Amino acid sequence: MLENYLDSGVHDGIDYWPTSEVRILQSRLLSHQVDLCLSSHPYYADELARAGVCAGSVASIDDLVALPLTTKATFVASPDRFRLQAEEVPVVERTLWDVVYTTGTTSGVPAPIYATTSDYYLHLQASVRNLDLLGVRRADVVALLFPLTNYPTAATARIIGEAAVAGASVVLAMPGRQIGDLGVHRTLEDVIVLVRDVNASVLMGHATFVRRLLKRAAEYGTNLPALRMCTVTGEPASDALREDIRRLMTEVGASDTAVINRYGSTEAGVSMIECTPGTGYHDLTPDQVLCEVVDPDSGRRVDDGEEGSLAVTHLVRRGTVLLRYLVGDIVSGTHEPCPECGRTVFRITGGPRRLRDVVKIKGTLVNVASLEDEVLRIAGVEDFQIIVRPPPADPMDGDEMIIRVVSASQSPQMLQIVTDAVEMRANVRPKVEFASVEAFLGGVSAEKVRRFVDER
Image (tube, rainbow, N blue to C red; front, side, top):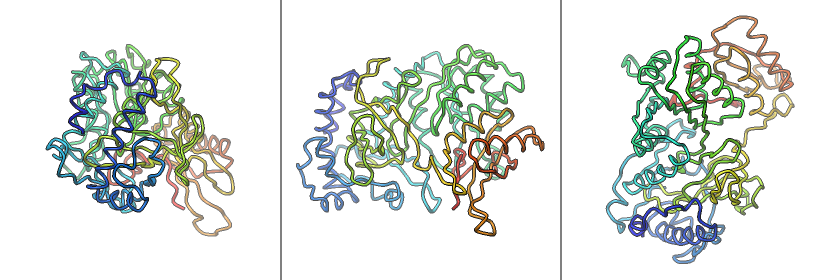
């Protein structure tokens, strides 16, 4: 089946196809994928049978609602059970190409995501479409600012291939937390010099790290005239954060100030990109991954414009295969054509936001995203982390909110400024303390800062 898919061209122009034609293709791919899971998937063979699904019973994407939802907790508890074990498929569909890892396990041990040769080729196909929207060119020098972590991550492994598809030069910056005395990671200052010396034109990385690099470069008086674009992913990038990145690009003398936001998950294996800020994230691979917005309790699909949980289904993957997998984000979307680029594919138009975006602290509802934006706007704040803890002594005192701030100005005045700004925004008086970035990089990965930590 996949061999036929690969030989059929690349579904040229599918992002402009009529929705009805896309649905026909998705239904055909889904039917085969479910049958393959019934016979060869350690987890779904049992789950689908319990749900009354048998070979041939899923003939349309409308039948997908009969399949159970899969939570992240279920996946990370036994990730190897989600690796397809089909021996009857061609060699390229069962040969292991690579393994990347995703965080979020209760044990702190990352969960593996397996990719076969055909999975990687499909990623390269998706990259061709991504690049059409991103505008990365052969003449570009792309600096990958994702950290060198304790295990392979999709951010680095996959985006190297994406830049290679464009024929662009790729430079690995390798920032991150040092492991012993090996000395293989670069400091922030070293990365700035590298970006300058190679005349990087495109920076790719987590939004907060890109901002921190540009901010420090501006403070040092470093000029980056070749820089024309930053593409950010891996964590929420608010309008305020992106606007600050554009401002900093101007300060370092960038030739342009394009900031392109993208959304994705390691488990889904693909990313969605905005054509123009505010138009929503475009699903450029509807022939690889089916996106649904669902009620997480009933599994019912919600209407366009209505909020629900984003669920993804792999239509052609052969390594780690997930069906109706809840990525953990609340979104709303539409199947209407994009008013800017005319693409007809599904777009996320609202969100994404995590379920924890509104939390109760000391009896007060606090919008976490709004609070993060408020701290980010404070002059002199390079990075930060918000921690909520249970009362340290008397339960009557209520929960404790701690703001850990990275700032070159470690003065009492800075502590007071952050305290007042947070209290005004959240109606909760925090405890503010200074910290280094390394002090609160979360998890075993040191991949990115856990911006909000609820320890209750």
